[in-house]
Length: 139
Image (tube, rainbow, N blue to C red):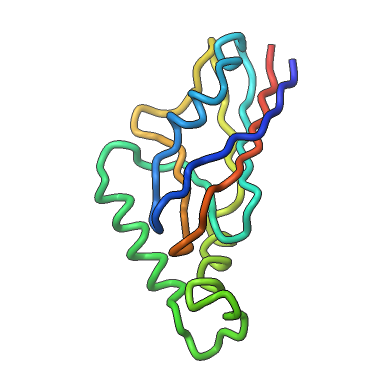
């Protein structure tokens, strides 16, 4: 079985957000898969996806702090700033974290670890709605 669809996320403020529930709600077909793989891809260059700690919100805060220092706004060496001071840093953060995650599926459920969740890294102050392409492969 191969199934693919687009999923629209609501606009979220800048930062790191758990989106596991959005993905699960948008994919009722997951329950039919005994063994497979879910691939989640974001169609944007200024937001990212990753898997990390899903329990303690300070992890998401610390992620934001780290990446803001790694790719600071208004750095004098950035040339790409036509869309504002958060534009180039957003592209760099997205490049560091990546645009997709793949998760095993076992007996109709994501085979995430106990403390794992899917993160959206929203790296723009006003990024707007984000589009995911989710592809489910399995039997």
